[in-house]
Length: 639
Image 1 (cartoon, one colour):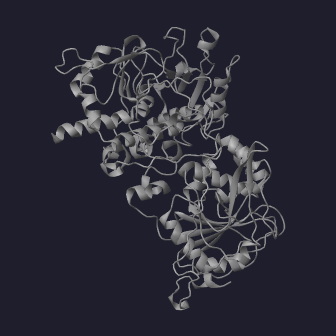
Image 2: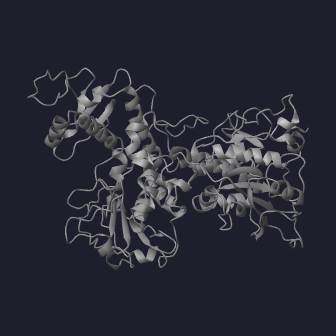
């Protein structure tokens, strides 16, 4: 009996991850539905699993099986990695993709795909330095066979991207080229070499994409429990009161009132099973497993947990053109570097493989968003990174205050100033290193190899903190290593009058950003900022320095889908602290970013990831009328 229940749980877990498995190696067609766009200011968080026991096979590291090697093509004459792909061109800078210019007019969808690749970290303008050369096939649009480029080389290290089945013969002299195609056929698809794409409608968003429409009622009242695709596009449904095998005429039970629906859209059911090319095989499969009986016995909490997993897969890999294409490139990159580049946990747990760069690490323990899931904690030290911009006065008092922290491991001074370096620095008990910057604000978020700790305390030279404030903020960050923990806050809001996003630095109870002039966060976000953000956004931060705080908060919120955390800060310093660094001269009052900054960043992300919060964490006994000797953070009591 227990063995039977384990088999049921395994099948249901595999069903929940069906969408991702199709892209990684299957070739079934995915029809992407387009849910309505959410209202501005209403972002949704990553799913929080309600039934970890059921989902542990693909969302918990301790129960994961060893990753198997990429499957090889079953036919001796077909291509595989050893015979048709030269990985030696990819070992230097990872997967670099050169895109051939379009030879004719292209559709809006094709244009979006080219733009998403050219704006990604994969793109290179040099075909000689590329690991992969991408050819966008326009066969379905022009009705003619696409011509091969001059550097074709029998298709070696090429990827032919087809969004629709091509009218040309399948021979097309593909040779050794991979094919990423929507709805490939069995006779042409090479498992472990080609990639199957979902069908992308013209209206599919380029970036961002709408989140899934998961409701907290599971199963939802009034809808069918299960729908099975029939031959010729029909659907047969069954609800919770149906027989355990309503599709088998030889069943002893009453088959029940099955309903047949016509049309290409999915029916409104909790589970939809899509059959293969032989409908009778799917029917025998259901008959053997008694799927309906298993679903009827499943608790609502387990159904909701499975649906949450599919919502994560949609949001992480399928909700936009950019995510679909970038997922395809990540799959190819994993094949190049081996499956260890992205373990199963990174693919199947939020925030997903697209936001867990293998160039940073292949171990989940090194990423900030997996600490709590695995029951681990980041190390107990931090690195202070002090940015010195114009006018470039050495932050002597700030260095002394930070050096007094028992948790400080090193102090790094990023000197981004034309003035010469001072001849001497304050003596500290920990190493003090001066880094020569390139006079750009984005230098603050470069992944410097000299940073030795997980935690970074980002500071501006004009910031003012006490040692107690630093100590307490770091202790808070250790409990929330995936978030930003800061002292100064600001808020975003939707401006109905102007039809866009607004920004305010006024001190209110609600906030959605913390300023990086004094904030703790994980060093991994430096890697994401430098290697994942489009170049246009980093250029925007350099040209409009007051936008840099907004951009960093957007990035962390998009990864975690959580708001930052505020910690107490001295009132007299808060009134005089700068909002963002980069401009010359002192600023006695906060300076807001450029008027269009937040809207430009939101447009580039494709959605608004920021979330508002009213949470502020204070030390125990802070400002309570007790003896000063009982207070751990005594200086916070001072006015």
